[in-house]
Amino acid sequence: MDLTGTRRALHGVAELLLAGPQYRAAGTIRLRVTPGGFGQVEGPVRVEGTDLVWDGGRAPLAGTYRELGARAGVTPGRAEGVYSDGSGVDPDDEIVVDGEATGLLLRWFGTGEQALRGFAREVEPVLWPEHFDLAIAKDEVNYGVSPGDAGHEQPYAYVGPWTIPEPREGAFWNASFGAVHELADERTLREFFAAGATASRG
Image 1: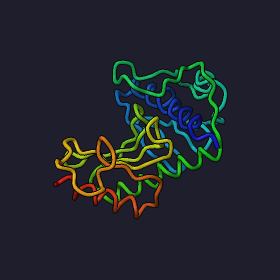
Image 2: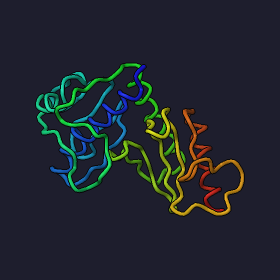
Image 3: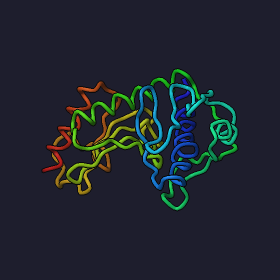
């Protein structure tokens, strides 16, 4: 299972085919989790499994980002000037996704969506294209789920207080920015977020 390559490819789709075109049309980079995938909040383009779906069509996540964008009627590109980090993917790079890895990552986003909504029903989760993580902010604490990154190969959930309480007591604070918890079910994630809220109050 190619988790790293698939994560980078899906990140590229989120940036170049969803958030970038949406930003140029509607002024927002926010994305959302959708059934079996993720998509635009101000447009019809979305990922569903290993396909890109748009009004009137769908196609496999294959070829270059430019080629797939042409099929969907969008011009690929980042939301220039909005953020500096990203996937590092170019519009002329090939999209290569592993079906098993895609399923794992999309299910993780779905689990994270439900856990975040269960934890804080009043806050709308956002899938951010910069770091490709699904997150909310509540009482000056960030809560979210990531499909993994250079520091954590496996998908994980996180709690990141804007100001970390000092001294850090107990084993909860296990990361430089706060706390992380690797792959888990919805109930465990809700409990992790709740523990983070308590620990963040010091």
